[in-house]
Length: 375
Image 1 (cartoon, rainbow, N blue to C red):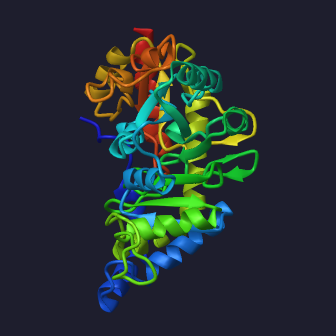
Image 2: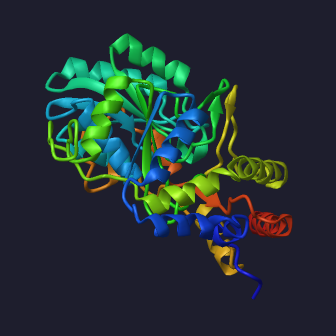
């Protein structure tokens, strides 16, 4: 049996971080394990990269979304529009504050929220009454930024804000604007598999809005006011621990090199994968963080089985759109449903994608795919 090829390879990455243990030892030495100095240093470094005034770190990417909903005073009777083809956390953050997620279809090329479907959903919600349209959560799926110029046009016309869910797109750009600078706020996740991931859970919120940043900092610390034991609002306990911040600071030192390596892997896939499958494409002016390399094929199950037989990992993101998930299927959906999301869920397959995927291993993956689809 040949060596197994994982979807991602964190151990290979660790070999490129010679100062990682020393960075963690520094935290162990000073003992400020929650909100220690590395947390503030990380927030400043991330803000500089995104070109925004504020970064507020938190415990995970789901909390980042939920904290935004709370800071933006989203609650019962409010409708928040979001794509059906996404991880549950996007809708969960809305439902968790008592508001209503309204599901929208996605673009078949980018997999991201479709501006025309969004506009139709907003119009239908206003006509139906009962819900007050409040805002939009976009999702930069698989690392590609959503179509923010078109989405901002829809949002501005409707008087709604945008919160960008960039859990998979940190490092990507659109028209030379980095992900992190879109919407009233952008959230991200530092889950280990993400382009910038820690060794546990972590998240952050990017914003240029001073008042929103102040509310977020208060909310993540039990609603604190001018000091730790003054509580000016009902808050949460959602803080990034210092060890994770130290790890992320080390990973930032190799992040640009890793991003270039991911692009090389994506380019190789794009050149050599057979024409029977649909490979990802970049919209004009966009770069991708390549959090995942996701193809579409009507032979998805057959292909995944063949990859498994050759010890090659693959994954399906997502086998069911949220409109078909038991927890979310009773929430409102854009008129006409989400046929694109429904179809994608039957055809998408994510292949191994990480900066340390060797050319030989990638050739092996491609060879198995070609042989399977030709058989």
